[in-house]
Length: 203
Image (cartoon, rainbow, N blue to C red; front, side):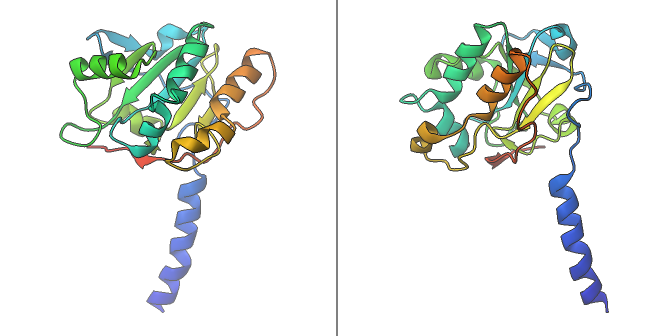
């Protein structure tokens, strides 16, 4: 009896875990304050009236390496494209100290130089509080917040869930598509997608 019941319950739990969202689209994105790579505090609500992208980052992850590969510069290109249009881009590191992806401010600044990245800031969340608040599961996990402070997109960067950089050329980039739609006054066509990448290395 017990074995049969457990087989029934577990799939239901998995289905719920996959479908539940910590923050629903269309609701206010939870506010937070984190230290940045210049050792200054950044508060999300300070960017009200602007579009904001949250990118969960771990440079040790093969899927992140794919999007930062210098011969493609996919993530860097997105950052430059949209920060030049006034979008705030916050890359968040939720890796705990001693785990893959953890960085000091100095290491993060060196990574920015080496990879020619253009985020507005890199933010440090070693306790994982903000990552768990947003239910960030993988790197990269992407979120877009509109000027009213509402979450309008969450999920994958694109529709090619491979760590091979060659797949970038044929990918539909959800972040670019969603930002272009929202900034032109259109509803986001795919507001929730399934993120892919390495699990966030929480404490």
